[in-house]
Each structure stands twice: as structure tokens, then as C-alpha cells.
Length: 206
Image 1: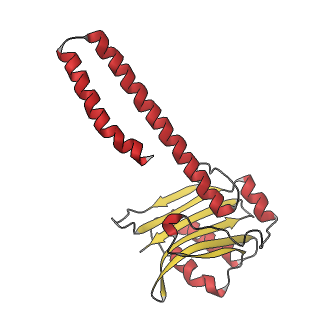
Image 2 (image 1 turned 90 degrees about the horizontal axis):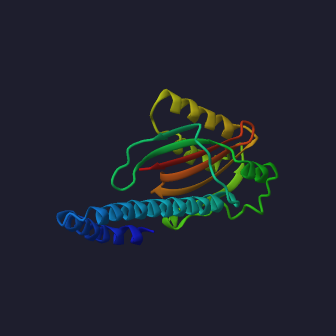
Image 3 (image 1 turned 60 degrees about the vertical axis):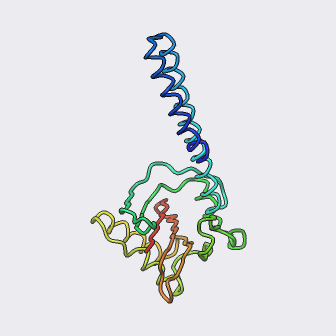
């Protein structure tokens, strides 16, 4: 999709030049047709971009949960400013989609042994497959790291909720991680709360 957007830049410049030339010649009817065509082109490009993004999102979520899904409006979302290299903190809580809930209500460790699957841009990271809560000792440093990002009191409340899910039975956890030496450096943490029907998606890059 990016190549279409890049190709549109010189086309747009040529089109604007054409419109200026038309206006200079005072061919108003032709100019109106040009305006209508330009608006239609922008609309088509925007719609194509939105459809492409939805498809990419669907593929990504299927790689996480083994089933296609779409997320609705988040119950809570926090996004810190990002550095030029992507360092920053994101924390989102969504209503748990029914198709994901059904999979984890009938959790099959063997079926989900290869999930979540890392996307290409996480190829150099490592994966901890889905497993039920309470979290085990090997998870602790990644959980503490992922839930250490600061922010508002509302963020702290949802972080505390996530910790409670991971401290008791009835939840599930999976994550991607990249260590800086002996310590976590980057993590994508995914938490499913079956009791309260919530999905936590957390990213911390440092």
C-alpha cells in the first residue's frame, strides 16, 4: 500500500498543475470536472487504505489468538510519546471478543502451542506461548517490566487489575520479549481476563 501512496505524490503535483492551467485559461466547467475527479480519487485512495489496514489488523490478531477477530472501542487506552526508535509505552484494554473467549474457555495448550506468533517486525524477539494464570516464576520479570510504565491514576488502576488477573486462576498470558543483556528491554504482553471478559494489550520498548 505504501507504494501507491508514494506514487500519488507526483501524480497529485501534476494534477494540481493541470488544474492551475485550466483555471488560468478560465475553463470553469473543465475545472469543476477536475475537482470532482480529484475528490473521487482521494476518496478511493482513503477507502483502499482503510480496507488494507483492516486486513492487516485481522491478520495480526489471527496470529496472536489463532482466530480472525476485530476489536471494538477500547475500554481504556494509554499511549505515551514515542522516541524516534519506537521507545515508549502503550497500554490498552478491550472487551474480549466472543471468538477469542470461546477458544480460551476451552483452552488446548497443544493447539495454541505456536501462539502468539511473532510478526515479521518482531523476528529477532522471542515468544512465550499462551498459558493459564497464575503466572509462573519465569514470567515475573516480564510482567513487572510491562506493568512498570507510569502515567495517570486510571492507568495505575488498570495495571493493578492486570496484576490481579495474573495472580489468580482464570486468566491467560502470552508475550513477545527482547532482553537487553540479563534484563527485559522490550515486551509485548497479552492478557486475557475470562472472568471480566477483557483483553489487555501492552507494549513497552526501552
